[in-house]
Length: 298
Image (cartoon, rainbow, N blue to C red; front, side, top):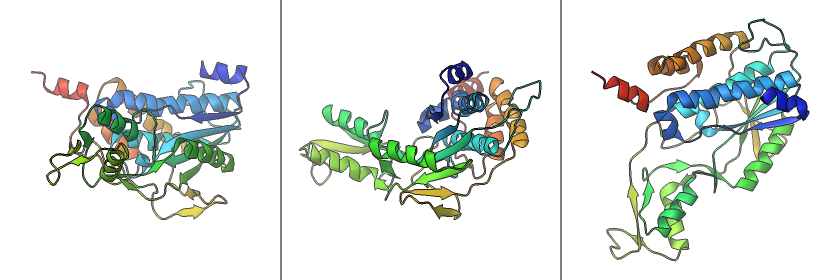
């Protein structure tokens, strides 16, 4: 269907933003995370290549850097797919049993950034809803920090970065300084004309509760891998020199990964992600709901 649409409307540029982005949701639904974030990117990228689309821009994430969670590792794997395809002048499409070479006319680019203020499921709408309900505002950890960018900033920089790539580029947007989430919560309470309820001020309006880090969640996030980062002509866009796998090697890994997903073999899924995604270091036990339910069977 994707290929048919791209050919029918002669699509020139694809911005691929479709993904499951919430860390806990993917930790609890590993197969769905792999299918959407990895297979979805693979299918869309290959359709773009077959349709002769000129530009393909993947919206990536800071969580793809030295990931500690499944979501971040699947996004890094999506990057690896585009990096591998971009280096092939005529790749054989994944899953093509006829082994037909497809001429590659598509420029693949990846753009990484952090959280977007006001986007679906982000912390600002959540805090606003909690304030309207009388609180408390829930923060996972007093020291947790995140990078933020507004929707217009993100959209503008993604378009600019996408036009700068030569093929296989991984661009990193300057997100400024990380923000402490607890300080963001405090500011939102004050901007609402309310006071913070605490031990020092028990008569305050709204309290802040710390709920503990969720599965796969980091205290601090990084936007870069290593030190191989160079400036570009845009002051807010940098280019990261990332390692990659050859397409034929990566295809073999993908075959094994998707087979493990089909068999609901989450130990193998985790191991294959570790072998493929450099720096992936999962923390804690597997918390996929299907895996846990089956592990408890007599």
